[in-house]
Image (cartoon, rainbow, N blue to C red; front, side):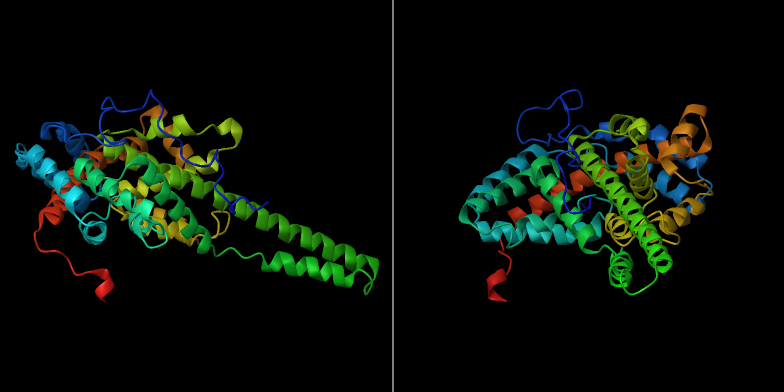
Length: 374
C-alpha cells in the first residue's frame, strides 16, 4: 500500500507524555495563563547568536529582538482582567459572529506572525468542519483558547495537522505514470516480442517501480518528520516552553529503526523555521518536493540557500550532521542551538500578541460584516 495514502496511528504526532507536560494542568488543555514577561527574556541566547552568526543582518535582528523584549517588561499589566472580559464576551456572541472574529484573527495572524507553525488553522472552522449544529460549540472553545494562550488547543492542532497532510498529498508531484506504463508494456509485449525483449522490458519495469517506491517512501518519511516538528513547535509555544533540537531528535527517532529520513524531515523543518522562513513557505517546500532522492528539489534547494546565508554547509543528512556536531561542540550545532532558543523566546511573544489581538476583536462593539451578506 502506498504509505502516503493515510496517516496511521503511529504516524500521528503523539500527545505529550506526562513527563513532558506542562505543570499548568488547569483550564484548557494545551494552554496556560500568561507567564511573567521576565520569563520571555533569555538575553544570553540573543547575544550568543549575535557572536556566532556570520550574517550581519540576522545577527543585528537578534539584538533588536532582545531589546524589544527588554522594553516590553511589565507590559502585561491588566491582562487577567481583559482575558475575563473577553471570555464573557465569547459566551454572549452569536456563533457566526464569533466565527467571523476568528477568521479576522487568522487573516491578521498570517501577516503579523508568519512564523507560527499552524498556518492552515482556519480550516478547522470552515464550512466542512462545521456541518452540524453541535460543532458550533467548538467555535467558543477556539476563541477561548486563543484568548487564554494565543494558540489553539492540542486536539485542534492535530486536526490542523491532518489538513497540512492532506494538502501535501494533494500537491504530490511524484508521478506513477512511468512505472504504470512500463508494466503495461510488459503485459502487451509478452506474446508479441521475443523472450529477450520481454525480459529486458520486465527488468526496466522493475527498476522504474523500485525507483518510484523508494522516492515515495522518502517523501512520506520526510513529511512525517515535518508534521512532528510542527506539532512539537505548537505545543512548546502554547505551553511557554523552549525545547532543544537534540532532545526532539532523540525523543522521536531511532537510527536503528531506519528513521533517519523522518529525523531529517524534522531537522530541516526546524532549521528553516529558526532561519526566519515563514511557515507557509516551509510547508510549500515540503508539499512540492517529489522526493529528496531526486536532484534539484524545492526543499533541499531552500535549505542550502538558507544555510548559505549564515555560511554553514550540510554534507547529506542535516540531522546526522547536527548530532555529530552537537557531540563535538561544532559550529553547526552551536549556531542552530542558539537560533533555536532565540526563536522560542521571540515566538512566545507572539502568543501574547495573539491574545491581545483576539481580545481586541472580541471586545470590539462594532460587529463585522456577515459572511452571508456577500
